[in-house]
Image 1 (tube, rainbow, N blue to C red):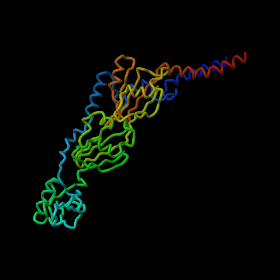
Image 2 (cartoon, helix red, strand yellow):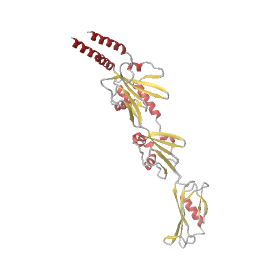
Image 3 (cartoon, rainbow, N blue to C red):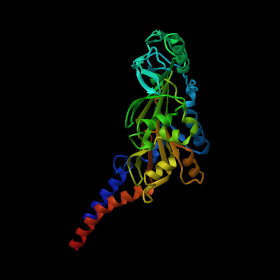
Image 4 (cartoon, rainbow, N blue to C red):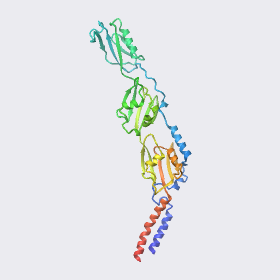
Length: 360
């Protein structure tokens, strides 16, 4: 009897301590602690209007590559720094190119070495002198060379080809082959230049694309560029495309089946998807009325409380976007706390009862 009395006294002492949050083991704060006022933390009820407000704010924060403005039209003109190839042709009987190759049925041709357009906008053509070519189309330069060679060659003609184009896009980051991609009359789009660089070297759903143009930079998930045609914008000369491997993540804690850091795709997920990826609530422990979403944004800490026992909570979860770094926490039900307490008391009483039986 004395042993049982001792155990009961210990049980009473345990009961007195049970109200102490540090006494019973748990994976986080109790529901009543989260609902109490904490300095510097805003506690907000997450209902249908609040979830719609959060979804609207997320939509407003979405950026678009269309903010960068339309790309300037491709110019089919020669620019400083481009590599130009000139081929001279003369009809038979040749006068100027008599010693050149005869591969055109009596006509003569001479391919000049490639030359870079100088900073003054000129190239040098033998017997025609230094010619200004910047801002002119290859066809116009061909006619200009032909005019300059009249009287020196028999029916002179020229072929002008631009080999090294100055209108280029730079693509770097998580691609298989970083490069500078020349633009053409095809009006290459964003996905064209990404493909030309070998595509993304990381999983598409975890890659973001940054596009810098004229001092402005916009970043989007690569999946969104693939899905939305308007984001697959036409490239402009001087654009810089950077691919980042930036997996987003949230942290799941408390009465969920899979605690830990949970990654998700760059396009984002909702609270419903986050709870599902955490394995859902633990039936034997979770308090459905005490689901919390903790977020820190712009130096402000906010804890949103969701009551899953209400029917509209399913739509609230579907509406509420999750941000990278958020914490999803599900508190233990009071019955689960009581069960842990009773198990603790039982572990003390059982040995005492066994001793009393032996004594009898």
